Image (cartoon, rainbow, N blue to C red; front, side, top):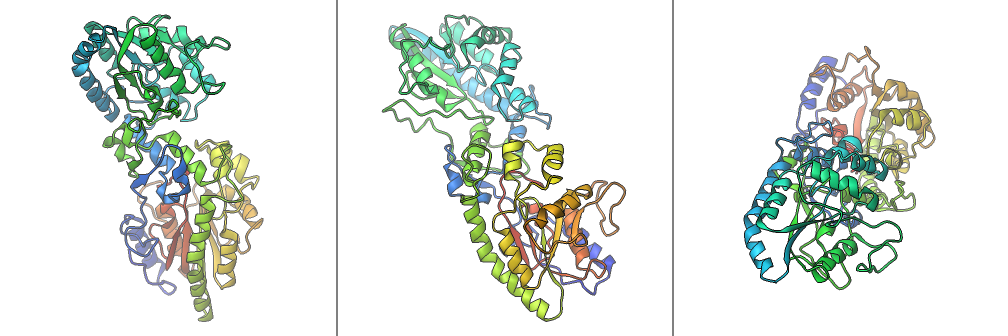
Length: 538
């Protein structure tokens, strides 16, 4: 949307009409980040390597936003937002049905080919998200933050349902004549409960003899030799398959798993990869073995509303653990949940972005101030002036908790300044622009926010710092389409108010924020989108 003309002399009624129109505008219609229509909407195409290295190269908008990834995964599993998968119908179930039907149709021919070897035809199956479905644990219980202690509760409690379509597949294989063997990364002390769980949900024939788990301390099998003291997943699983084939007389016709590391290392005639974007268990291949076909996708389509979960399939959805690793690389986080303050791709991108945008903003501030106008810059708080990475990741592990945010971070004024923003705002303020804050934080957080900002910034005042209102105190200049105002309604109409005489009669030279909802409906000559893949506020 082309920026509305300045409204210093306009009536408040006219301003509100414009604001309401702007608030309803789509991102594609909004005044853009770069100056061309359509820039105020998230990216939809991404390149992401499984090792997280794309965090070095892609930039903040090129990294799948973790909240959008979560929403996409939920859509894929038919999860309405409860953390519980739909066990009747979902894109995941539809994809699993296609995969298992395709494999079942080939089992007879696989059996004949395997029997011709003179060995016993066998199928190997993993457990988690191959025979048993863990979504409700991973999402509903753990919220994508895995803990072995809680997993043990689920395992020992035999709480997992069957993975859709897999009981029928395994039954079909047994009827044809295959021996079915389980190989899982679960521990030896979880073996009895695991066998009971798979049996309870309908699988037949699994016993301690044909269900392989990781061994207890000091009991590593003689047939497994690892390159280091701690065996990798591929070493454990591939060398167990080798043992089955070379020592026990099996021919493994099909190996089925949800992780690439379930399949790497050979010793199977055919591999079947089941979809699973909810976690990623990487493992290097065996020495001297190269299997590029057994590698995660690197190209993804992702819509901000999560609807890609209806269309992309499990391998086409960014794996959430890979996204986390990519984000960590981008922020220079070594795995502690704490961002690097010395240097990172994020800090480099911020430096380049601000160096590119600040001079033009400062120049306009000087020009308007010289004419006697009241130029201003509007800034969001979280991840615009104050940096939340350590809270979002080290403390919350990407699971937002408003109580923790308020009690442990906002009120104690713990946030550092966003990299580069102190120098940038100093330059803009010195050029004659007034600093105006506009945040989604609550009215009860206003004083603490100003106190936190005062540690680093000069120019924010209580009069020019806007927060969401307390109950029953909605400003008269805010009119919302529903009872609860959207972020865009609140922020765009507040910016419209700021340009009225009642709001100070400012001319908004620049609007700066890390969320597209900070910027849509903008009333500014310069709109600056800062990078932030750690959460998404539509």
